[in-house]
Amino acid sequence: GGRGNVSSSIVRFAMTEKILDRTGLRLHISREFSAMPGQRLTLSQACRLFGGGPREVAEALQDLIDAAVLEKVGPYYVRGDWDRFTA
Image (cartoon, rainbow, N blue to C red; front, side, top):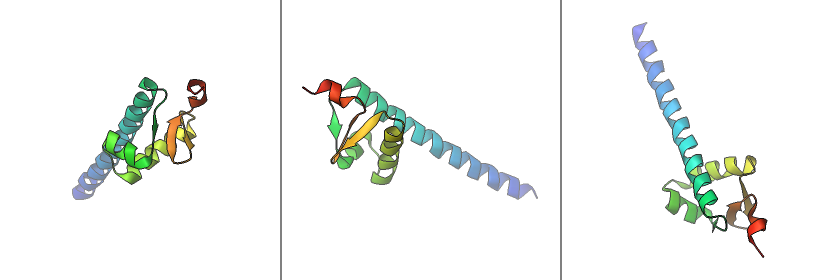
């Protein structure tokens, strides 16, 4: 009986750690776009800048699009209010 509890605790810890990593990545991306309002990045550029794999960065970017923090314009990810910064 005791082993099952240890194993499930390890799985829960790993899942919690992954969620925190994903939250940290979203915060990092959001802060970067806030600091540079005119910034536009492709997925590959975002992966290099934020140091993540394509899947995890794409998921984080999509979360920020869903939250109206970012928009996708063609191949580029831009701030949700990007049109305020273009003339």
